[in-house]
Image (tube, rainbow, N blue to C red; front, side, top):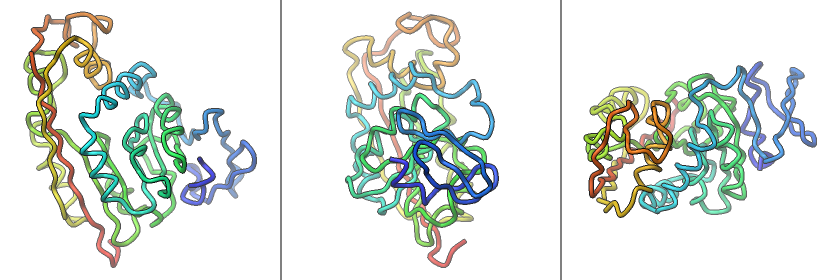
Length: 276
C-alpha cells in the first residue's frame, strides 16, 4: 500500500516530501495527486508515451511469468534483497510478489495497466506510475536494494536513491535467450553485448559483486507460449497481424521451433558504504 512507502517518495515537480490525506497525495509545494481506486499512484509529470505496456501486454507477461520459468530468478532477487526494495520497472509485480511479507516494496512502472496489477501483488507494496528515464520521485538514500528486471536503467538515480552499501540487482537476457524464436522471426532480437555494456556503464560507479545464470530449454507443446512471448514484449508494438496469427512482428511467415531457450543473467552491484 502507498501508506507503507509514502516516506520514500518525493514530489516529481518540486522534490519535496509527499504526504497522504485520504485519497489524495500532496507535497509542501501544494502539488496534488489522486490515489487510484486500484491503489497505485500516478506521478507522471507528462502524459504517458505510446510505448507504455498495454493491458493486453501486461496480461500476456503475467501469463508467461506464471509458468514458473523465471522462478529461480525471483528466488535470487528475494534472497539477495534488503528490507526496503525498489523494483524499477516492476511490470505486473510478479517478481516483487516473491518477497517476504515484512519487506517494504516500492514499485515503479511507466504502464498504468502494470501498476494496477502490481499494487495487489505484495501486502506492503506501494506502486507508482513513473518514467524510469526521467528523475525518479524517490527520496535520497532510502532504499536498500534496487531491482532492474528487463527494464531501462538510470544510473544516476540508482546511485542517488540507494543507501550506502546498498545493492543494484540487474536481470538481463543471456546471449541465447529465446534464440530459436529470434531465428524464426517470431520475436525481435536482443542486443548481443548487453552484459558487456552493462559492466561498462556501471563499473565506474558501483562495484560488481555477483553473477548468477538461469538457463533452461522448454518444449513448445502448443502455440500459447509463443503467443505470450510475442504479445508481452517489444515485438507486440511491431505486429502487423493480431495475436494468434502465424506471422512474425514485421509481417513475414514463421516456422515455429519445437523448443525455446530461456537464458537469464542476474548481476549484483554494490554502492560503496562511504557513498558515491
